[in-house]
Length: 341
Ligand code: PEP
Ligand code: MN
Image 1 (cartoon, rainbow, N blue to C red):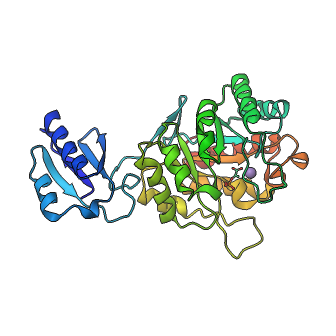
Image 2 (tube, protein in one colour; image 1 turned 90 degrees about the horizontal axis):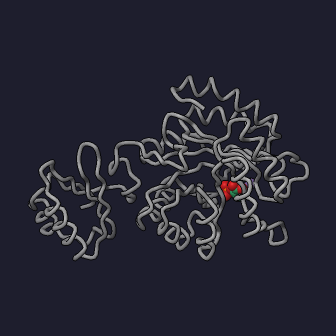
Image 3 (tube, rainbow, N blue to C red; image 1 turned 180 degrees about the horizontal axis):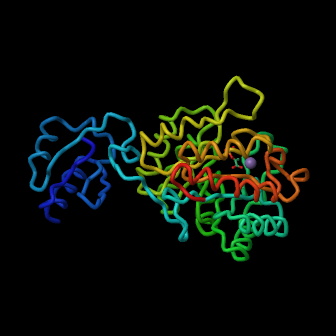
């Protein structure tokens, strides 16, 4: 028993009674008030609920139907919520008709460079500024990010441009400060299965951008989204950023088929990051266009005013003029699939 569909006549009293019984069995609930009907999503290990107990809920006042979800993820599934989730971030929506673009450097390097990049991407039409203050680097000797100082630079750039901020969290201990400075919290590919981090981020209500793990299946990825949602934060967007394959011509293999697959399996918005997907500047634009054609709800693109000098991911960062050109080229693609940039 995973979803309890309530009838139109269900009274507050009936709903309270059902919730109390579920909680008595050690289960949690997520009540979703749809336009058509109210649904109670049951959170926790429902396999322990006996058939008799399930029948008693089915027979309770105000209950129209009790449904078992066969997929291991529930709150994230289309079965649980048919309509697409649209996340409002400071007035910019992700998951609606418009396809917003998140752009900026891989890492926050200093205030001047960041603000200059922010202004350029805003003028080109970006809706969010991205930039890492805490960087997950393969080598412990590589630049690890500016930490709290970087967050302050992001806040300054937001003040100057009005662009909401997307920035990565790596450690649950940084949650408070990241919630304070960010508008979307990014969980990077390397932390997709850091379950403690997922649960911690689930306790806040900030939108979360959950990147796909380097070698994770779509099912594992959705289970990670479920971790966040199970703690109450339903504002999750999924970001395809390429997976590991045998191919070495590109940094990763951008799995664009994940976009339509996710659209079938989940109601959550899907973001595509072609920059990390391909790892090479020249390949970013064609894959960004393909991502929109495939149904992406937003894009994430790395841009740097001086990629040769960038402290990380310079080879895949677009120069501002290349980004501006791409933004123009994306317009007819979006229009062709009933969206707008
Ligand atoms: C990033 O966005 O800069 C980043 C580190 O991405 P990923 O986690 O996808 O590698
Ligand atoms: Mn990067």
